[in-house]
Length: 252
Image (tube, rainbow, N blue to C red):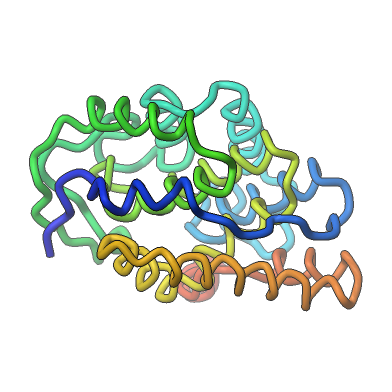
């Protein structure tokens, strides 16, 4: 497997035409919902040594709280290389070269079961600076897709790209006051295989599969909230990486 050198300009040109709705009913106060989603991303998608990813205790985890605040502060910082580095440090503090862009290698998998893949040697920071120019011209929907596309295909960091992508989406959600984008940050993990397929097709200049993926995620949210805002929060709170069940049992 080889990480793509940069991002294809033909695909990036499509993002200005990206159109999909992010309007959904609130799942309660959007700030507290963003914080809840941030805690899930930090403590339930990766083992958290602070709360041991406990299914109840993570809601009061200090490390989760610190991560949630970092996402909200990052919304003020704005898109760019500094934001990416700061959020990588917050989302993946134990990652190799945390807070620094990769050189020519990317690690995938979990600790203890990770392996390296060859990545094209590029100046990631210079490339992100170029992407910022595009980002600043795009509307919110285009920026959402750019974020997913960049983090999945460019692999800016040696390790922790998925965690950083979710953190950046949570930051974008906090800045936009959007409950859907907070939800989407977690849905990207829950529907990871579908997301990767859509990203790969976007790299082949097919935008429709990505738009369909995003619309499907919105429909999923709307189906949940038909049963009340509590149903959305219950789904979010119940999310976990499958490996955490085994890890948590090992420590009990």
